[in-house]
Length: 377
Picture: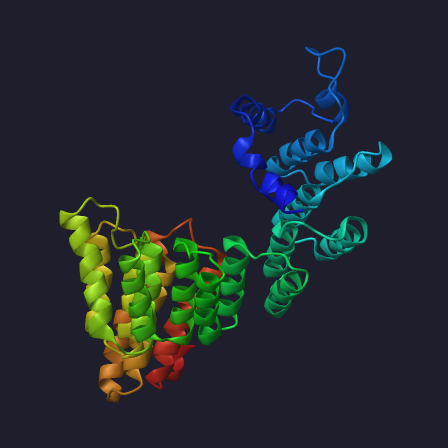
């Protein structure tokens, strides 16, 4: 069983380059590929042997094309032709269920149960990873955690993908402690957290607003030489902003800006970076700092503002207006209307109906603070 598991895991790595190239070529081609053309191509009149591996490769072609029905068709053809489906067959089929919109949850459950009936005991954890992906797409985060425990009970060794999916589920549940414990569990199991694992924990830090933990995670990534991209910095920056550690957040922002100006440019503030800082200032009702960051984004960083950035500007005005004298509130009304007009002009033709509605609603919220009923209406 151990030899079989290792052989299965090394299958992709050991596949000959020309076979991989052939699969990629088939995936990109527009012509018809089916069981007959795949196993009996024109250049091989005698045909190829119908094997599980060959059928799995055909399923991968349909999967790469985003053809769910094609994947299911091959799986059905395998049963009719007495070609045994293995763990990889079901992994490809379950992955196909996860990439359709919306995720085909019931079909995935059916395939998962069928796999257990036919292939027990399983040798690898990959089908579980694929099923977890389906559950993630369906938002069933608690079921993802249960599935990890089921895999362990069946003596399947979780891999980095298993743990990273579990981390992401915990982060969506805002369970930062559980995410940290999972990172420790990974190491004790001999798995090394990668950049995706760390970013999942940073995402949880941002969700719960634990800036100190986010900074610790960044330090650990540096210590273990884990690549840190701008998304990781953005999550850490957001965690600091939510927890009120604005000086730490501005330190991260300064690091990104310095890298943009003097480094290799691989790490530079993005629109998301600027908007996160703007949101902090907006929550404090600090119109001046929110506008300064907005202008910095456009003028110095050459990043075009989107609807969300304009909404944050208007949010700063609504928050500030609630605490100001009546006359000052009416001055802010004029400023809000100016920004609304700028947004509608700058984003003309690119705003969705919902974005327009939100911009108008934010402006109405600013006006409402002035208690000027006719102007508000």
